[in-house]
Image (cartoon, rainbow, N blue to C red; front, side, top):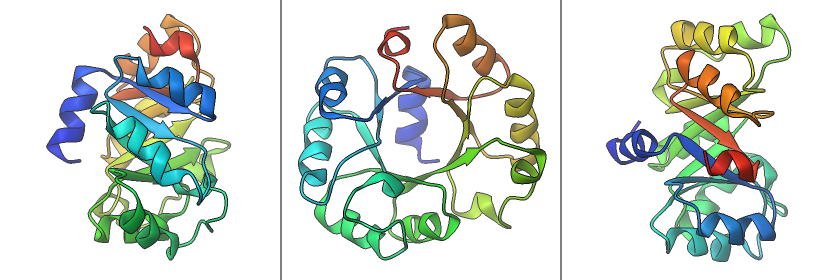
Length: 187
């Protein structure tokens, strides 16, 4: 993980995740240092990233959720060329490999639905993934186990809505919490 990203997360471990225009406008006024952009289209992606970047925040684009782009490797150079995004989020390891080649910071999103899915991660993941986002983030034991197993910083995301959830995830070893919940943004 690059020092700028590490410092930003250390300054504020709450990552604002935005899934619509209303939340985009609201995130501008938060003290968040990192934003996960979970929506957009080919038409408005560059503008949305720019709005956030103008506030001095670090922006990650969830490539799998951009309308009009496939969630394949070929979309990564498009984001590099036409936006000011700092990083890429994806559930696809080959996308993140390409993103790392193009000097993006990378977040590998994992849905913790069973032990097989958690333990069977691509070989050499740490070579091209800066952080792993575990969803849902309400599982301190899983966060701790993933930290030990992967040796990659863990972000807890999804279903976190109370201060106790945030504290439990951070105590379990998560370096940050990502949330679309505006109440969590202000914790």
